[in-house]
Length: 233
Image (tube, rainbow, N blue to C red; front, side, top):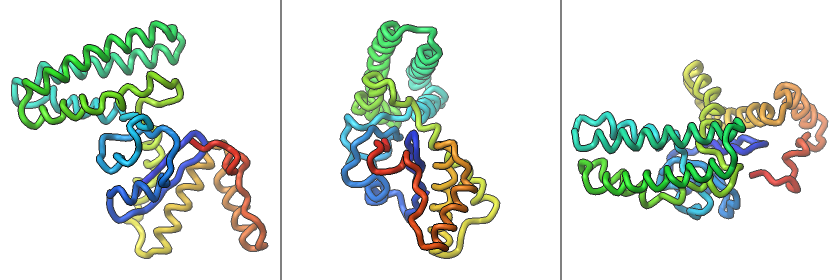
């Protein structure tokens, strides 16, 4: 199951694979927003200046380096974990009003410098497996710090993971679907429910209105926020 989420809409899409074609089908060929993702190569068709890497995913990878059984990895991994934690703390303090924008950006610039320094050490000193990971993070440095250029860009894609939770529970409880029509229903009903939540609408009332429009052969009730004239990303 694929998912794309914005401030006003959630779209679920079933695809039988994780290839780039599925990502293109979900996002469209001319995506013009900023996408918060992991480092999966399937998103490479999106320009680097339109991507923000999810810090939660990165932090989990750093913990793996810090907890590696090989001694050469541990100190570098531990320092990177501390720096990632500092980024989260600084972001939260700024969002709560405890830090001015100037101090916020100044601290992040300092963390970024230390971050690159540790990754450069890791790219030389870590074991082969984690050297490659450090090299990838160095290569994707701009995508890690994109959020510094736009306050609206999130640090993580945790909201998308929360939106997926309903699907995960459904799959565990009902063991999936057994037909193409069932698959279409699942992705559509999940999209409606989660979008309704984001718009502050009752999904059940919205669904009733859709069914009524179908019976009466009238236009579907599309919320004003989702009309084409409204920016969706």
